[in-house]
Amino acid sequence: MTVIVTGAQESAAALLRAIVQMERNATTAVAVTAGKVKRSAAQRISGRPHLPAYPSSITYTASRGAAGPEAEIGPDKGRAQGPLGNLIEYGSIHNAPIPHLGPALDENADDLVHGIEVAVWQAFR
Image (cartoon, rainbow, N blue to C red; front, side, top):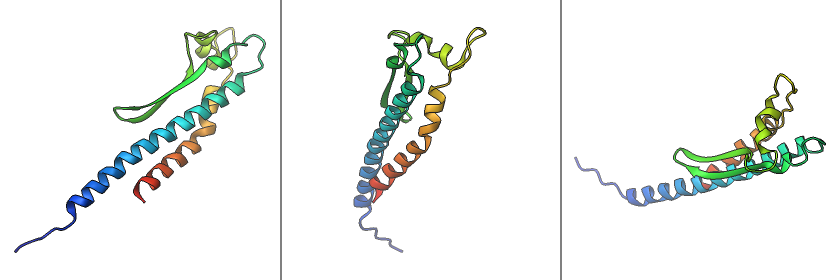
């Protein structure tokens, strides 16, 4: 019995290209959503007289990590009022919490899912 396979190398190459493109697209989707979360969190916490610099301390970085696309969103401790992030978000025995990062993430979760779906669809069409 003899089996002849034609087009296997071309199919494998096309699949590899699609996977690489999907990773690029997914990284973009993560970065776009991270920017939306950052802006939403800053907007939610803006206008508080005792935290004038805190909203601008909220930043994000997006990259391709070992496990795939990732983003880190939150206050930069090197910026003015940035070290107050945990205290503001979760509160303390003397201060009520002011949730802004968690709700901003929740608000944009569907956007991330949609972005990943588009990333996959575009890569494999």
